[in-house]
Length: 146
Image 1 (cartoon, rainbow, N blue to C red):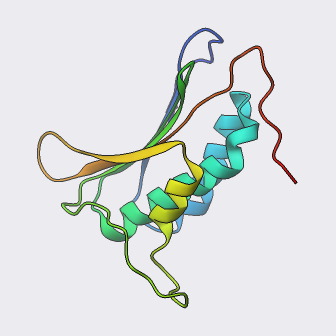
Image 2: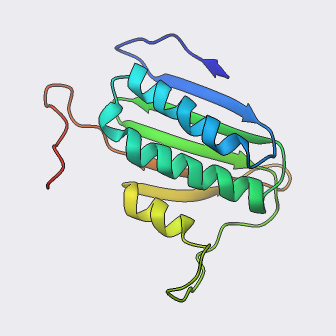
């Protein structure tokens, strides 16, 4: 992992080059949670950790190595990116209610403020990303309704 020094006035980033192995997903979720907690973004951690895990699992299952997970927090928001080098783009599946797999992109769309796919400019691969807006620095984050 590489991470820039925390600067209250600048962007914060973290990047992990990950093995093409599903067993890494759980450990990576812990790393994402640690980074967000260190950046005072704990209020987003549950949603971001779930989305990062879904994007990473999709990249490992359907994409190709190498795989990179990148986080960036700046005044405009928080962005999670997973890059892999597989040729296929992610796609939403039409599922029946008993399907066990295939809901990852729907989860990402439900939890993030925005999401998308950017093809890599040279060769096969893509970056699948999700973004969250951050509350103004002077206001506390909204409390979830119960």
